[in-house]
Image (cartoon, rainbow, N blue to C red; front, side, top):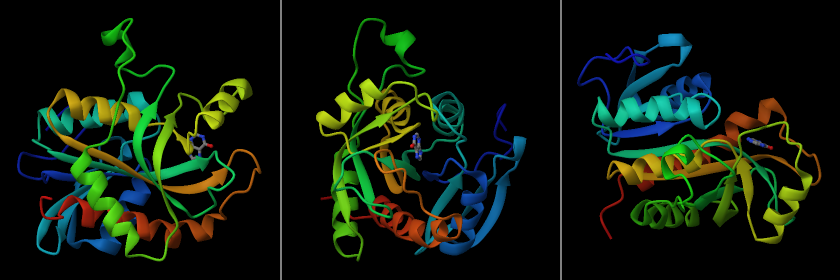
Length: 237
Ligand code: HPA
């Protein structure tokens, strides 16, 4: 047991999927895992462990934003031995060719700040995805009927953004979408010699204001979960 995860040793698999929303953790575990069992409910941040094609998998909510994700990922890696961590979440599309329901595989993530900024001081560390996971996710996505984009994203500290000028520069530099967690996940994975990737579904678009109706979200998010699971257990290239 840790401060924020009530699971006991052995309850958490080496492969962990991380939705921001604890209810999405429950939905993904019940929809995609065999014999999912609740292993954490501290602060309502649900975590489930089950198997996928015989492989043990934990699906643990991370909460919203990098400080929240940092707490869960630190404990998952340092106390429970997690080795492969894949964020499954939503993001806002930024390029005009990125549409609602498209999937984004985040090769890198830019930030203004992250929980690790204090440690890096003047250094602009470049958080990037694990190559083996990214490659496997790209292959898994290519087999499905879902438009997929691979490239840089932006991990923001705010959902209610007050910097249109910054978004303009990000769009100009090819950034595909915005969410609030991946950069710190990639940084922690690098620090602890783990593998990490963010597989994201576009739930809204910054330029057009279009947004997926709540009812559509679950079905659109299924592709993302399956891509993440296939990537996690793909044979080494
Ligand atoms: N901004 C930040 N995070 C998000 C967004 C957004 O527009 N959509 C989904 N996650």
